[in-house]
Length: 200
Figure 1 (cartoon, rainbow, N blue to C red):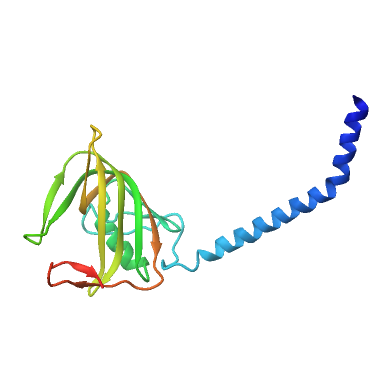
Figure 2: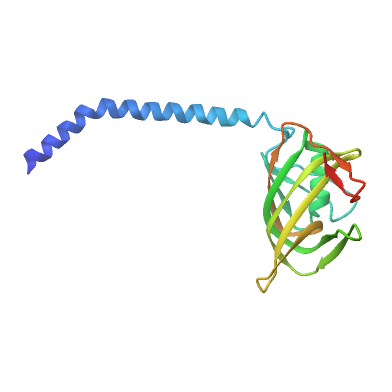
């Protein structure tokens, strides 16, 4: 038994240089991948900003008291109004256009359903604490700046879901969003048939 163990140990020692080469190659590749990832962050449509916190002030207490930014992730906190925050963020930091998705919670919200007959949005008030099961949308250009177009699915205390076009959402306690910018600017123009600003 000891002799067999010694044979195995000897064989492992003979192969140790090969193992070392593989380990060194793996480490080198990890370093190259890390450098590539770090450099790619400089080629986004978001202006560079401090990683930890970007503070913003606004007259409305529900608007932009602070906005935490982590690369392509932005985090809203209790009391922030989602649409106004995204509007301000786009105006100050987005250089092209962007799409976003995320999750979190609202303490109150207004969503809407677009009526194709009246060509008007019909509001649906949500006055309870709800989970933001999904939020997705985009930040695109209109003549006077950026338009925030967002849809949400909200979960209630009883496990029911309600969804629609997001007009207003007061965050509590958090809303976590990931943004992906576009290479080119995306514009919206007024569609005379519907009265909506559509991507053209």
